[in-house]
Image (cartoon, rainbow, N blue to C red; front, top):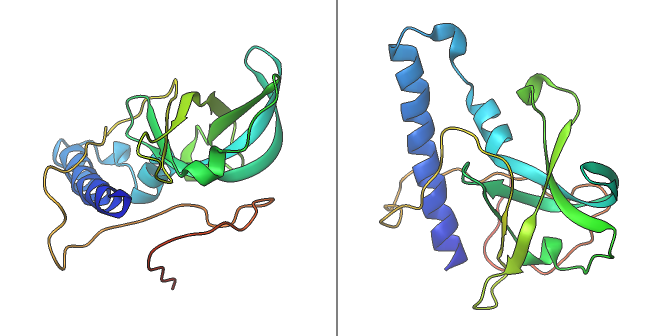
Length: 173
């Protein structure tokens, strides 16, 4: 289920990005064209465990994985990335670079609120974030067609992440 959903999400994301970049270019706003790299950087985000010293103030503890947002406040990750219990003063947050890929550092974090494992017990976690970005993604109504290009992205093995069991075929370049 997760593989099919992720494949469908990637196909829709790719099509929406192409339409988004094409619409901006055709509107004569060439200076406002957004690169695919910046679109990925805005939707695929690293996750870390943080210590909250005060409301809105966070101190990073360790990187734990990655996830993605649809762009409207929903956040999706693998459950094994965020299943470690948190203490009273700890939270999981997604980090962004507000200036896009040109920025050298992640300068804003968004707490993963209402973080829960998928009800069927799969390695899927859902949360809400106070973050929105265009284009907003949607689930595909149909599975990707055979031979259709899809894109998968993330930050494999970030610093301080423990190796975990992973199912499915994996290839790297």
